[in-house]
Length: 126
Image (cartoon, rainbow, N blue to C red; front, side, top):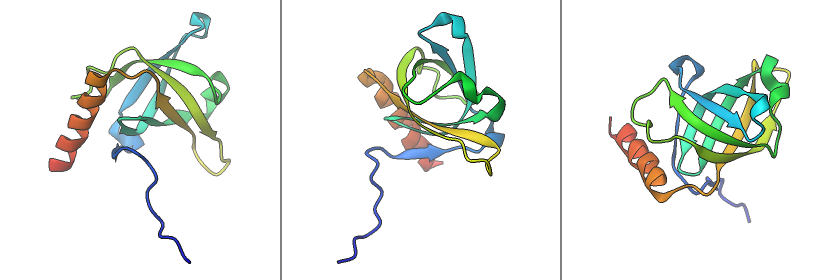
């Protein structure tokens, strides 16, 4: 039996291009590592897809716990501040210009989850 190719993600997401300029600013629990900015290429109630400049790829790894301090380059997501997250996967393909990262929100407060859901709903209504 051939199984349909279905989306397995739990949450609806929206996508951005690098040119959209939507960025997440991240802090590390080890404050000596400073802040890290990455392009947000998608967002859902469960997490973020990120694109990171290859020259910064050694600053972050799968399993790292980070704090999304805030998002820049878009209105409507200002309430997403100081969100705990984990880097779930890293894709460093030589043919790509950026390193891809999958970031899952941890202990995500319901009001913030709702804010993302409403933002996504309004995005699709445009």
